[in-house]
Length: 511
Image 1: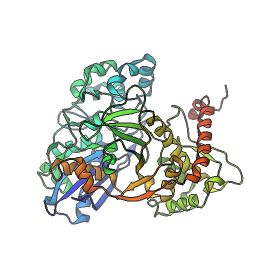
Image 2: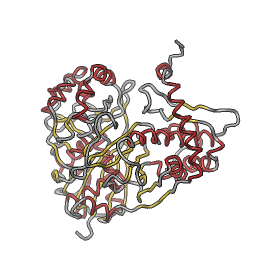
Image 3: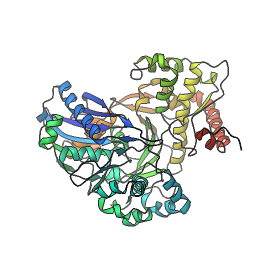
Image 4: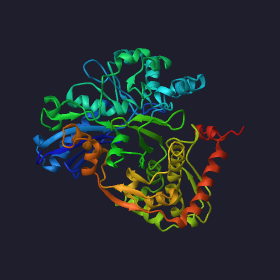
């Protein structure tokens, strides 16, 4: 397969990316096109599915042009993307309504009712999931009641990357890693479960669930129509693809339980691989991993680096723009944080601007401001607060496993050496950063490489395609200081438990 390349397509919450890699995992070119998020009502978060596909097709055309790689040189394509949310299509593959993003909260009342009625606990042994509003089970229940015509027209319930793969191949399928995180299936048996759906009152959605495939299965080829839109060659093989957390896991060479992976993006993902699932309520989510017969133990919440994006947009507008750390805003933030010693700042930031891992109504909070504080104190508190939220998740994972040897980190925050050293110092663990800035797309490319036989299995593919670019060793002199700060962070969470509801609704009244 000389002079062949692998194409990874990655759809996150804001961008459609296409990246070309050599067979040994080196990035050749990348292109990104913005996907516009729609907010037609408070708490709603949607995508126009036609626009999303147009963004994917444009990104693929652009990356082929930028790389000068001929279409016939693309050996295989694989997609990854955000999990959960919901993408509904009719019998001919046309969207029946806008896609709903996983950050959507319209179905919160269903989750609250299922929790109060004990439904969540009753099915937990099979789903291995916490209930939350952005999952397909809750969204299908909402749609069945509020948009019955759209529900009735739906032929297939898809995840984001499954929709993109369907547009490429013309064939509808649901891939296991994504679907195992939806509370629609028995994770241990890797099969849809009609009884689970009945518990949620959506048994009539069972026939709308597509045939399941594995990540490295070949699931069709690029159609002539898709070729005309993307510039790919008709007949190019397309792999099943994978959930974006699996993609980051593969690109970090997470293949056994020695390490913990952390994704520091809009969501803070904390995960490890295990041959056996965790039981009970020990972790937020257990899902099937792309590596056969392995599971991902996952602790996650939208409490990570997305908080910094908001801080910069709102309070540093004169310095906005650019990529971390090269752009003016991120470079300046890193400079300010780097020259502010941790012992000089007692400010604590609770990173709950987009959601919480503490209380459903928790909001972003700064505590400890005084007239002596400057931007460096506040921004260091943001960096530290995000890591404290990850530390909370890690503590839950450690109930199920031994302390890891190291952290393999990915996500936008890893571009900051200052931030990664804070991660190492707070957690008192070595932190390693895989090479390359497009780890989601690289994970998809690894999947594609296995699908077409470039490598016989995932361990072989990761050994050839994953390299560690940077390492950060913890400073033991900072351990006691950060232990005290983390304990204060935890005390503040406890003290605010009774105040969150009024703060989140903007109600000024004090009971």
